[in-house]
Amino acid sequence: MFEDFGTAFVTFLLIAAIVLVFRAIKFVPQGFEWTVERFGRYTRTLKPGLGLVNPLFDRIGRKMSMMETVLDIPSQDVITKDNAQVTADAIAFIQVVDAARAAYEVEDLKRAIANLALTNVRTVIGSMDLDEVLSKRDDINSRLLRVIDTATQPWGVKATRIEIKDLSPPSDITESMARQMKAERERRAEVLTADGQKQAAVLRAEGSKQSAILEAEGRREAAYRDAEARERAAEAEAKATAMVSEAIARGEVHAINYFLGLKYIEAFKELAASNNQKFVLIPMESAGILGSIAGIGEIAKLASEKSANMPPRASGSVPTVR
View (cartoon, rainbow, N blue to C red):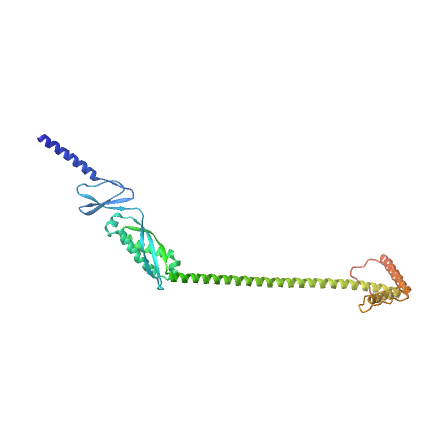
């Protein structure tokens, strides 16, 4: 009987020891930290891996996730600075950095952070005009992150990011914004059209100016050419006159015949080219014309012989009439 009692007692002790060993050994998963309480009071924190606790007096208090957590902020209606109502919702990314403070400094950590974000969304958006709210979302996110991160530091929580997911103004404001955007686009189109017409007018005026300049330069060049031609003709006439004068001074009758024949032919040319004359009377004294032509030929021959015998003169010089 005593032997059976002793065997049962030893078996009980062995089983109790095994149970105590299993209760003393704790395996903490990666990404978590467990708090240890003794008689209801926090004593220490178990890190990921194998941990040992007193199986008789210690127990696991809170199992805190140390990973970054996504927290949805419910949507709410917010009044802006210019009394416009918008519907805003957000999303927050938080991470516990101190398991003990997150476990014992605040009750219901996620609910506390969500309500804190709601109140700060109202505060930040309420201090801005509607146009600023719709166009400066990054500023809103930065201000929310700064405020909430500062407020959650005593709780052992780090707010890594806060983003505004949606900002929805009322339908009447949306329609007004659409009309304003359409009017602004039409104004820009009219401005661009006016600028295009202005540039086209400037280009046309510039083209007309350049055309007038080129035309004036052309007329100037033509006048210069005409003056040069008249100057050359005058020089040739003066030279011819000088040669004839010399011939007359020497008593050569061919020079007189040259002038008479030349004038006769010019008068006959003008008479034949007149538009008012239907009939042309040819004089019967054709011998005069032939004599004049012969005189012109003789003068030309004498001029050629004289030019061959005379020494060359400087170009552009005109013989002096005696």
